[in-house]
Image (cartoon, rainbow, N blue to C red; front, side):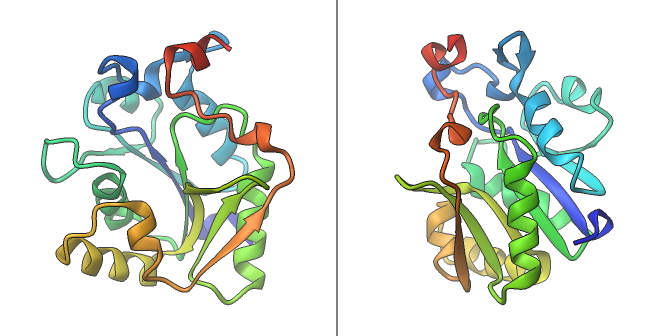
Length: 190
């Protein structure tokens, strides 16, 4: 798949409740802000990037990518950030990552996009042998956005709840370490 047809989205607009309210995307893991790891994952395979953030907007804008905020300023969850972000996407495909998986690497995004191009599903989730990762996925922008708007209007507020409305598939990765989720202070020190 040509990177020109893909926009990468980094979901960094959360409340950071497990980190005492800290802006998770700007927390450091091995000396670097988490958002930088996610940009490293995306930039080899996408044409543009949108960062979903609800605070420290100037810091995120310094990375020279589009920054969007939720329509409401109440930290309504990743679905609110995704709705704002997908609305800004003009490419045929979107690749969505959370801001807190620094070991993901570029192979996961590349493989998700390759699979999406070869398969018929509207959305493909990443999984490992232990679980599905609902915040790591590639999708066809138009049907995903239409479904997301409908789900939001119906009161759905979880990624999983929305994704169940789509023709959704899974791409399984054998290495569970790729999906290290740094959402606590202990994990950040890892």
